[in-house]
Length: 269
Image: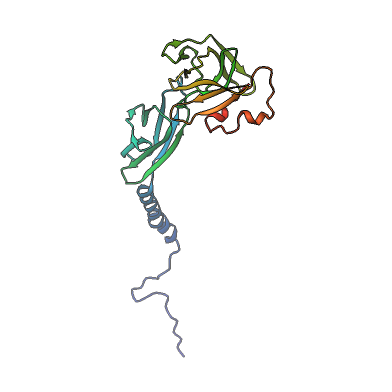
């Protein structure tokens, strides 16, 4: 009886053995390059610039300067900065930085577009400049002297700018200007005194940023009370009752009752 054994060689006479060493090579030469290439492609397509927008402190409360720095591997296609829609002029600085002058308060908007079409936008609120006029805080009339207390919360009142005009247009300087420091809120007020013109005294004050405020003061008698009328441009006239010397008002609230928004802050001392 003859026995036949199946040969492990194929017809070519060579033994075929399945190799297990091709998997690392497949990962190294095919899968890994595919992942890296597509990752770089995704980064190139979707990479957006990073923008830093910093605002410098102001020295005169009139102007400031903003610095924009761009962080991106790609060249920029478009750069624009505007303040409330008004395009501002940029000045190129070191590397990828730009400066822009700021002359008023508002919303600063900076937009950068990369060469790949991706863009970034940042906003910065500007409120460090002084664009509000000083305010009249207190008014009193005694023995023909008008005493005013004025203040400004940012650049402060400019005492050299204070003057008044009387009913015939004659300019009058204040009799005294006293600086008053408030320790509670670290602000500075000024107390002004003028010779009162019963027919009307128009007082002008400015802060150090050049913002101006003005009011006209009149007086007339109503019974035993002196009435101090305060008239501001483009505002309603409000009557503020001044306590006559030696009298006590029946209700302290009567001193400010009926005053409008502007005059509600003017308190009779």
